[in-house]
Amino acid sequence: MKSINKAAVLIAITMLISGCHITSQQGSYILEIETTPYRESDSSWARATEIILRHHQLYYSQQDLLDYQYVYLDTESTPTIDDISWLLWDLGGLDSYVSGTLSLIEIRSQLRQGSPVMLQYGPYYSGHYLVIYGYDDHDRVYIHEPGYGTRVIHYTDLYYQRFHGKGHYWESSLLIEP
Image (cartoon, rainbow, N blue to C red; front, side, top):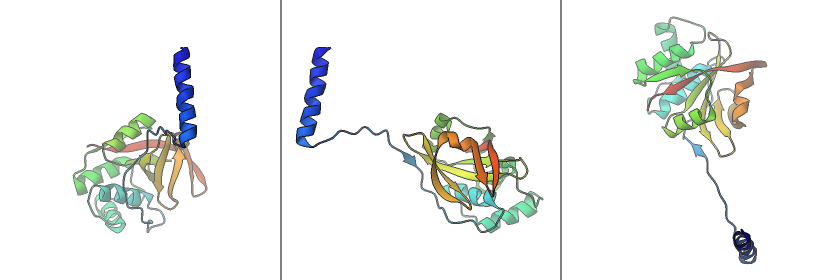
């Protein structure tokens, strides 16, 4: 045990004298996404969906998605996360599934597979959407929230967010199959 302590002290002294330093970094993982602002005041779902589609080289505008909503989803209210899953399949052939809240390990796994994660907040039929596109080694996640922009928050702060002056809980997640 004494020899290990002596070795650690010698390494520390050598580092101080030489001016070098050793860093240990697990690193961060950040997907490249397009983060242009959203164009419609109540269409966070369209912007979040556009981000997912563009990440998979499928180029539909927010207006294309709103038109799809009115024609094929036959609704003027915010589409549900299940509707968005169907839209991803119908327009882009992207296989996805809806889940509840996710652990940080599940989020990291999805991102490592190369796809951002869409989160839905608030009521099922009038929710608010954002996209997670990265994480770091301090349990923070990189999110893009239409209307509020890109920011980095701690994973535990995902469970409750405020949008447009109202508080909402994270209700569900949309995961894209690799």
